[in-house]
Length: 102
Image (cartoon, rainbow, N blue to C red; front, side):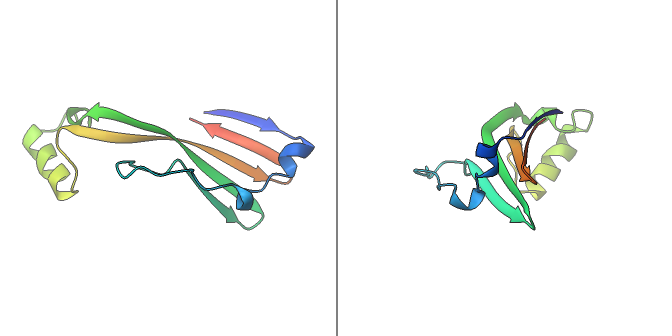
């Protein structure tokens, strides 16, 4: 896990409530590019860095392929590819900004 902590007046004045929405959203976009929320006095911003497509066989690689395919079907997931979301989290609280990229 990588963390960067900064404490500057400019970042302290930033607010997720004034974060503009994405300019446009594509119909085939899997996830919006960011989610902002406030938990008490803590501002949290989750930023998507895209999706990593992995072969479905990487999920439970030591499981019988028929069992894996049945489970994926039960979960309404395709059997051939796993879409792994890549996200980073930015937390602002008490004049500090923490970037969690793991």
